[in-house]
Length: 141
Image 1: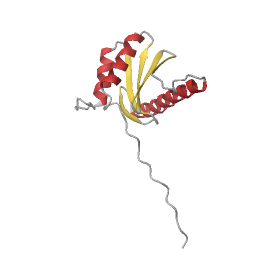
Image 2: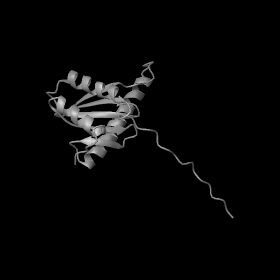
Image 3: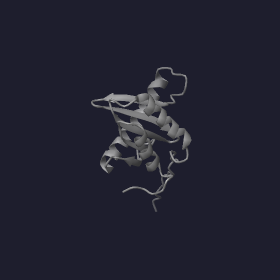
Image 4: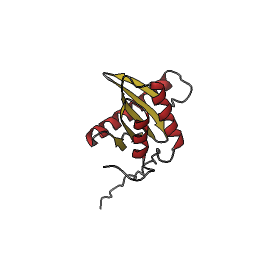
């Protein structure tokens, strides 16, 4: 079902896929792996891919810190060639944007469009921190 809210992250992801030939599907996920929106993915695939890309993004950042990056492990973008696809991931404020494309995709155009989207729409691409409830203690009585 298409979301008719033109400010919806799904609409922006859909537009990105339209602009970049050979880009097949995309999603926005929270940094802790929850799917926020997905285009051309079923809900199970979106949930799995969200968890995967957020973990990859985090691991690469930690690897950079461990290797003495000096930049705090801030990851800007990743492109991984997997089987018959390119998985591209760009960080946003509290979230990640991921696109799966055919091998023939123009990686420079895809990376440019992904970064442009994240920079142009920081509010739509951000996820606020979740509220955590402090543990309660039970008193014997």
